[in-house]
Amino acid sequence: MVDLPNEKVMCHHTGFKQNCRELVCSGKCNRWIQIQGYDANTGVQINESNCIDNWTPRLLVENSRQTRSNAAAIENLTTEVDRAHQEDMVMRSKEVLDALAGHPRLVRPGCDAAQLESVSPKLIEQ
Image (cartoon, rainbow, N blue to C red; front, side, top):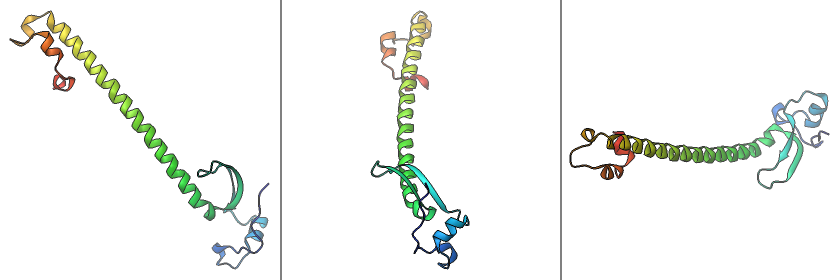
């Protein structure tokens, strides 16, 4: 069921010349909408009708909350990808070092495989 505006409320889009209730009942008002869901601030379930201009502040708050939530999820994903990339680089570095260990001419003079294992993956990338 759609709630109707108060009989005394005048529409600001008509310069307060026409009654909101009359506009809604006649079907001339396309700004009167029903929203169902949960209030972002209280968590209480809502099922209300109101002018879109009255909903805007609440919807902006909800939009901001969702944006922050998405940003946090992206940050977590970025951290996980970076960690996996770092682990992959360490694994590949060890594979290269193992391959070099079998070819003494490829290892720098005076540097054994144990010393090369302590080199950070960032140095090996360069």
